[in-house]
Length: 370
Image (cartoon, rainbow, N blue to C red; front, side, top):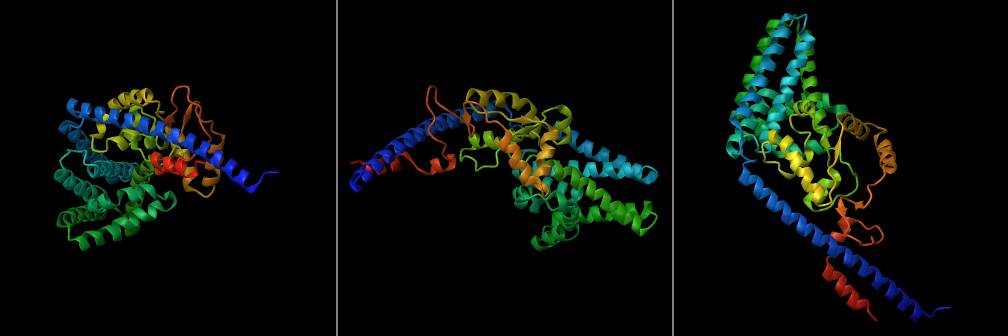
């Protein structure tokens, strides 16, 4: 039988041992992240000196020409009437491609000039998509994080017909109001000349916008699915390594997703022109591997299934089961490598560890020392 004093001493010894283990781990984590952050800053400066952040007018002209050609092809096919479903699909694709340009303007990566990118975001949003670019700049993160695939078609129509026009009037944005007026007049004139009835015109308008919404927001949702649903680290690089993954970095997928399939590069360098991500991905993979971080890549189909599981009723259950069955990489926990030869202590939340600094552990150790 232990006396109360012996129990207290035994508890104090166990607490001190546990504190020492966690203090050592915190010191290792701080040293690793300090080196990682310093090397990343050096890499960023090298990229700036090499001209990776310099915009390409030729590429922007190509993107604009692509959108114009898609719109012209869609208009011609709809005017033929026999090919109107294919024409509406092309018009939806053109509107979605405008959405990618609007999104890049939001990241200020089209021209890297904030004022010019602001005007281009408003033009691509209002004229090409029927949305307010100013609203998108304020709510893009919230929209991307709370996308609901089931109500997406209704939501896009609500935005175009009610919410965004009200936002433009409320903010008195004359530029966007003019672009929206040009778009509305153009659509009404075209449908009045090609549609046989009001019902056909309404159905064509709805199908055109639904196709655009499924293409743009559906692909945007794929980039938001996280690899690990647990709380991420506070460091940008370790958080990116454990939470995000690129999607099928092939030329076809890259074109289809408007360079947004390079999620890791976009998270680390949002203001870099996005068409440079395919070349940058090779360099970032080497950087991640050199620092013991896992460079995640998954297929387009797998990303689509993950998004579907996260969006529909049985999604949380299936996602939990798939996460439990997935083996964790050897020698890696939460994207942070262990020091060579070091023995890992019992699992502890990385986010909680970072909230407790080493000096706090030292103070607690001195208090409990007998």
